[in-house]
Amino acid sequence: MNAQKKRCVVLTGAGISADSGLSTFRGTGGLWEGHRIEDVATPEGFKANPQLVIDFYNQRRLQLKEVEPNAAHLALKRLEDYFITNIITQNVDDLHERAGSSNILHLHGELKKLRSSVNENYIIDFCDSQDIAMTDPDGNPMRPHIVWFGEAVPALDEAISLVQQADIVLIIGTSLQVYPAAGLMNFAPKHAIIHLIDLHPVQVAGVHITAKRASEGVPEVVDKMISQFA
Image (cartoon, rainbow, N blue to C red; front, side):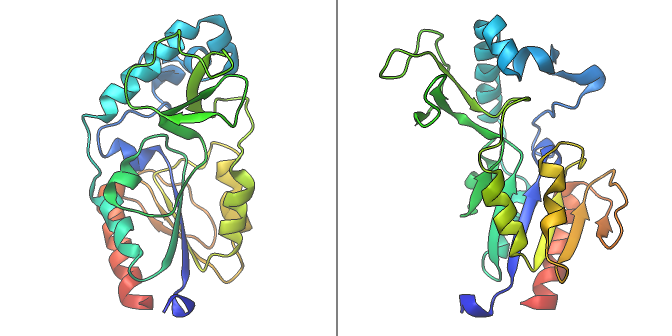
């Protein structure tokens, strides 16, 4: 029965997607696939050169078609059989969905969606290459449905609420350097058990550290959780 299940909230970052072959934006010199973050992941970059930004995300969609969920994504799906599970992801890919997880909150938007550049509530599913001429029903240009640097994070309040209800928090593949997402674990209840799984983890008091890649460490931690609490 769900009433007997503990609540598990999972916060995932770029490290879990990297194990499927997707590049992270925190590359050498602040570059993402050879581009400055300011040029392809800010409102100012889109205003200055919309074609560059559109081409960049078109390439990211093509890349996404070539990769598959890895062992970490699949292990998180298993949690649903034993815990009330919510995934809060900083990633814009759909690998959690493709692994079969049910409750996923995308903090930073979704690569396979577009939205109006004026009406934030006009959002469409989109899997192909965007044309710069695409508009919403009112004639406003469409843009990638991505929360860029300098923009508000609309889903943040919902994410905080989920963490506040958690019995267990898993933090996977994140440097804990990107705010506001990095501050989410501070909202966990005092009784909550917190695990950090990352190849190069920061040391945080009271947090269980697994210094491994997501695809290796997550299945191990999930197995321990199931044997301990389920």
